[in-house]
Length: 271
Image 1 (cartoon, rainbow, N blue to C red):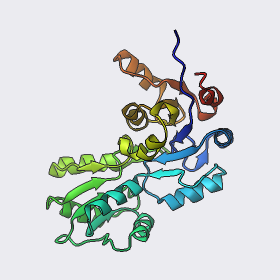
Image 2 (image 1 turned 90 degrees about the horizontal axis):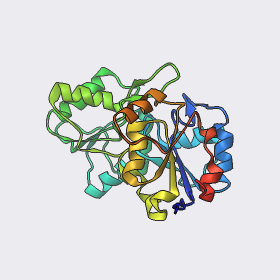
Image 3 (image 1 turned 60 degrees about the horizontal axis):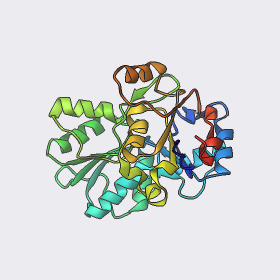
C-alpha cells in the first residue's frame, strides 16, 4: 500500500543561487513564489551575512517577492540570541559596517569592537569589505584563545562573475595559521536555524528549496524536511551523479529552476 505524502504547509527558499544571482531574479522565480504564497506561508533563509535582515527585506520587496512579517530567517538573529543568553558584552564582530550597525541597534549594550585584552568573543560574519588590518585584529584575538563563533561556514558565495571566498575559506586560513576552529556556527546546516518552524509544523510539512548540497540539502536531511534542488546555482548534474556513484542519498526533487517545481501537487499532498 502506497504511503500518502503529507501536504506541504510551509515553504522555505534559499536566496542566492536559488531565487536570484547577484540580485537578479531567475526566470519566473518571482511569479512562482507569488503563486505559492497564495496557498502556504513562504520563508526566506540565506547564509549570506554580508548584509542585515533589513537589507534583505528591502531587496526582496524591490524584486516584488511576497514578504510576510517574520519571513526572513537569518543566522544573525540566532547569533544575537546566543550572545544574550550567555550574557556576553565585549565582542569583536568581524562584519561589514551595515551589519554591525544593525546588530548594535538590536542590543545597544553590546561592545562590538572590544579590545584584545577585554574581548570575550570573536564573532565572524561574511565580511566582504574588510581590510588586512581587520584580519590581523581578528587573528590577534583568536591567538589568545578567545571564544570563536561564526554565522556560517560556506566556502564560497555565488556571484554572476563566479563564486567568491566566503567564511569557510577564511576558516581554512585560521586553521592553517593557528590551528583554530570555531566553537559554534549558526547558519545552515545547523538545525537550530529552523527551530521556530519546526515547532509550528511537522518536518515533512516543510519543503526547503536550495541550490547547495552541503548546506541546504544537509539541513533538510538533519531536520527531516522535504527538499527540492534547482540546478540554477552551485550544484550540477555531475555532483548528483557523483553522489549516486558513491551510493549516497540524492535530493528527492531535482529541477532546472524553481519554476519547474510542481508546488501545487506538493501542497495538495499528491507527491
